[in-house]
Image 1 (spheres, helix red, strand yellow):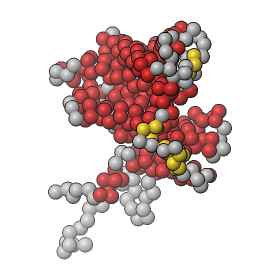
Image 2: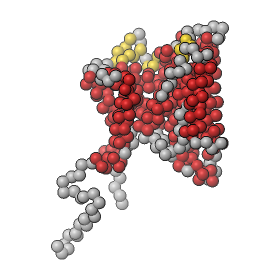
Image 3: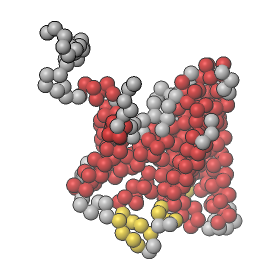
Length: 357
């Protein structure tokens, strides 16, 4: 009867071990450069510090990565999330400046509601192209990735639109229970997604579609509906991320808002251990991956690397983390003990006690 693994073995085999260790190393590097990096202070009843800033800045990537996780779990990809985020910001800011009372709470609520509904429709459009028309996900979402910037430019007339609504601004700069509201919104969305996918059969259905869509369909799973749903959800998450980004600057620049956020989201998903081949996903891993990306973005200028090369630096670090997670790479890097068996050599058979030498 095989022995059950010990606690240490379970920890070493856990898929979140390497992302958490990589995050810890990043924090140690920052502390080595700036000994007060982890300091947190209370000011006006709110928490401030580099760690709090990292949590707040991770919110947009975390939101986009949540939707991306479910899309990738169905063996898809969504390249249009950055453009959808720009459209959400354009719709919300345009609605606010055209309202009768620009600073009213109802104006902010209605503007954000309109933006989110538009983004769900755009996500459903991606799902329609993939699940109904059978277009490859990378091509289907590439269409909206290109067209989305034009749509947001058309909504804002190509101008940088600035708004003055304190309720809308609080989405990025507000605090609740001493913590940034943007981070709490992202965590709330994470918990909602976890409850939806782990407390119901939805998560299992998503994974089954990602493993084999045709077999799932023959087994009675409505694969088309599942795929349609996850793309609509991805649109919702991207829209919320766009609102947070726009609220941070109280403006929208259709050319730059959400630019390359789809790459950060994909990196966060991969770092978190979700398979790009579909069929398996980890929301906790995505959460760690988003925090890792936000910490890495903070680390680059902190250690004196020019911000212009941040994506090159990110690529190097992400490759290192992915190699650490790869069983094959760890096997190649593992140091062979002296006198141990040579890889590929037959395993020696121990002689029984009392048998002839």
